Image 1 (cartoon, rainbow, N blue to C red):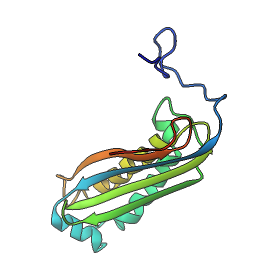
Image 2 (tube, rainbow, N blue to C red; image 1 turned 120 degrees about the vertical axis):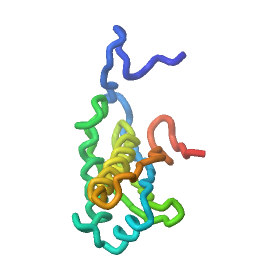
Image 3 (cartoon, rainbow, N blue to C red; image 1 turned 30 degrees about the vertical axis):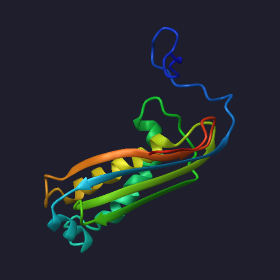
Length: 158
Protein backbone atom coordinates (compact mmCIF):
# COMPACT_ATOMS: atom_id res chain seq x y z
CA UNK A 1 0.00 0.00 0.00
CA UNK A 2 1.26 3.51 -0.81
CA UNK A 3 2.29 5.82 2.00
CA UNK A 4 -0.41 8.35 2.82
CA UNK A 5 0.76 11.85 1.92
CA UNK A 6 -1.22 13.65 4.62
CA UNK A 7 -0.18 11.37 7.48
CA UNK A 8 3.11 11.88 9.32
CA UNK A 9 5.39 9.13 10.70
CA UNK A 10 3.53 9.18 14.03
CA UNK A 11 0.12 8.88 12.35
CA UNK A 12 -0.71 12.56 12.77
CA UNK A 13 -2.36 14.69 10.09
CA UNK A 14 0.00 17.02 8.26
CA UNK A 15 0.15 19.36 5.32
CA UNK A 16 2.16 17.93 2.43
CA UNK A 17 5.45 19.70 1.75
CA UNK A 18 5.26 20.83 -1.88
CA UNK A 19 8.41 22.98 -1.84
CA UNK A 20 10.30 20.57 -4.11
CA UNK A 21 7.46 19.99 -6.57
CA UNK A 22 7.66 21.55 -10.01
CA UNK A 23 5.28 24.39 -10.77
CA UNK A 24 3.00 23.47 -13.65
CA UNK A 25 -0.21 24.81 -15.12
CA UNK A 26 -3.07 23.33 -13.08
CA UNK A 27 -6.73 23.09 -13.99
CA UNK A 28 -9.76 21.52 -12.31
CA UNK A 29 -13.44 21.35 -13.22
CA UNK A 30 -16.18 20.31 -10.79
CA UNK A 31 -19.96 20.12 -10.89
CA UNK A 32 -23.01 19.77 -8.68
CA UNK A 33 -26.79 20.13 -8.69
CA UNK A 34 -29.44 21.77 -6.56
CA UNK A 35 -32.88 20.22 -6.98
CA UNK A 36 -35.99 22.31 -6.33
CA UNK A 37 -39.65 22.67 -7.16
CA UNK A 38 -40.44 23.89 -10.68
CA UNK A 39 -42.00 27.11 -9.30
CA UNK A 40 -38.80 27.86 -7.35
CA UNK A 41 -36.72 27.41 -10.50
CA UNK A 42 -39.15 29.67 -12.39
CA UNK A 43 -38.80 32.39 -9.72
CA UNK A 44 -35.01 32.18 -9.92
CA UNK A 45 -35.11 32.40 -13.72
CA UNK A 46 -37.52 35.36 -13.57
CA UNK A 47 -35.25 37.07 -11.02
CA UNK A 48 -38.24 37.47 -8.70
CA UNK A 49 -36.76 36.00 -5.51
CA UNK A 50 -37.08 38.51 -2.65
CA UNK A 51 -33.37 38.35 -1.73
CA UNK A 52 -32.33 39.41 -5.24
CA UNK A 53 -30.45 37.98 -8.22
CA UNK A 54 -29.82 34.41 -7.05
CA UNK A 55 -27.61 33.33 -9.93
CA UNK A 56 -25.28 36.32 -9.84
CA UNK A 57 -24.86 36.22 -6.07
CA UNK A 58 -24.23 32.45 -6.15
CA UNK A 59 -21.55 32.87 -8.84
CA UNK A 60 -19.77 35.54 -6.80
CA UNK A 61 -19.99 33.36 -3.68
CA UNK A 62 -18.38 30.49 -5.59
CA UNK A 63 -15.49 32.64 -6.78
CA UNK A 64 -14.90 33.97 -3.26
CA UNK A 65 -15.06 30.45 -1.82
CA UNK A 66 -12.48 29.12 -4.28
CA UNK A 67 -10.12 31.93 -3.24
CA UNK A 68 -10.56 31.02 0.45
CA UNK A 69 -10.40 27.23 0.22
CA UNK A 70 -7.23 26.98 2.32
CA UNK A 71 -9.08 28.73 5.16
CA UNK A 72 -11.88 26.15 5.02
CA UNK A 73 -10.12 22.84 4.29
CA UNK A 74 -7.42 22.38 6.97
CA UNK A 75 -4.64 20.73 4.93
CA UNK A 76 -5.04 22.68 1.67
CA UNK A 77 -2.29 25.02 0.57
CA UNK A 78 -3.16 28.67 -0.08
CA UNK A 79 -2.81 29.12 -3.83
CA UNK A 80 -2.56 32.14 -6.11
CA UNK A 81 -5.48 31.37 -8.41
CA UNK A 82 -5.19 32.77 -11.92
CA UNK A 83 -8.80 32.11 -12.97
CA UNK A 84 -12.07 31.02 -11.37
CA UNK A 85 -15.23 30.63 -13.45
CA UNK A 86 -18.61 29.57 -12.07
CA UNK A 87 -21.62 28.80 -14.26
CA UNK A 88 -25.15 28.08 -13.04
CA UNK A 89 -27.46 26.61 -15.66
CA UNK A 90 -31.20 26.01 -15.21
CA UNK A 91 -32.37 22.51 -16.06
CA UNK A 92 -36.11 21.81 -16.17
CA UNK A 93 -35.49 18.05 -16.21
CA UNK A 94 -34.07 18.09 -12.67
CA UNK A 95 -35.81 20.57 -11.95
CA UNK A 96 -33.07 22.81 -10.61
CA UNK A 97 -29.71 24.35 -11.36
CA UNK A 98 -26.50 22.71 -12.47
CA UNK A 99 -23.31 24.38 -11.28
CA UNK A 100 -19.92 24.01 -12.91
CA UNK A 101 -16.72 25.64 -11.70
CA UNK A 102 -13.33 25.76 -13.35
CA UNK A 103 -10.20 26.88 -11.55
CA UNK A 104 -6.67 27.51 -12.84
CA UNK A 105 -3.27 28.29 -11.36
CA UNK A 106 0.40 27.74 -12.00
CA UNK A 107 1.97 26.12 -9.01
CA UNK A 108 3.22 23.00 -7.22
CA UNK A 109 -0.20 21.61 -6.26
CA UNK A 110 -3.61 21.20 -7.85
CA UNK A 111 -6.88 23.11 -7.61
CA UNK A 112 -9.39 20.26 -7.27
CA UNK A 113 -10.49 21.36 -3.79
CA UNK A 114 -10.93 24.93 -4.98
CA UNK A 115 -13.21 23.84 -7.83
CA UNK A 116 -15.34 21.62 -5.57
CA UNK A 117 -15.51 24.33 -2.89
CA UNK A 118 -16.68 26.85 -5.50
CA UNK A 119 -19.48 24.51 -6.60
CA UNK A 120 -20.57 23.66 -3.07
CA UNK A 121 -20.68 27.25 -1.81
CA UNK A 122 -22.47 28.42 -4.97
CA UNK A 123 -25.18 25.81 -4.43
CA UNK A 124 -25.49 26.56 -0.69
CA UNK A 125 -25.90 30.23 -1.63
CA UNK A 126 -28.76 29.34 -3.98
CA UNK A 127 -30.38 27.47 -1.11
CA UNK A 128 -29.93 30.42 1.25
CA UNK A 129 -31.40 32.91 -1.19
CA UNK A 130 -34.41 30.78 -2.20
CA UNK A 131 -35.17 28.89 1.03
CA UNK A 132 -38.20 31.10 1.78
CA UNK A 133 -39.78 29.63 -1.38
CA UNK A 134 -38.64 26.03 -1.03
CA UNK A 135 -37.04 24.46 2.06
CA UNK A 136 -37.08 21.04 0.35
CA UNK A 137 -34.26 21.94 -2.06
CA UNK A 138 -31.40 19.43 -2.02
CA UNK A 139 -27.79 19.68 -3.10
CA UNK A 140 -26.45 16.56 -4.79
CA UNK A 141 -23.84 15.13 -7.09
CA UNK A 142 -20.91 17.41 -6.20
CA UNK A 143 -17.86 15.86 -7.82
CA UNK A 144 -14.65 16.48 -9.68
CA UNK A 145 -15.09 16.14 -13.46
CA UNK A 146 -11.58 16.81 -14.69
CA UNK A 147 -8.10 17.88 -13.58
CA UNK A 148 -4.81 18.46 -15.30
CA UNK A 149 -1.26 19.36 -14.41
CA UNK A 150 1.36 17.96 -12.11
CA UNK A 151 2.88 14.52 -11.92
CA UNK A 152 -0.41 12.65 -12.39
CA UNK A 153 -1.23 14.56 -15.59
CA UNK A 154 -4.70 14.76 -17.07
CA UNK A 155 -7.67 12.94 -15.50
CA UNK A 156 -11.33 12.90 -16.62
CA UNK A 157 -14.27 11.31 -14.78
CA UNK A 158 -15.72 8.41 -16.75
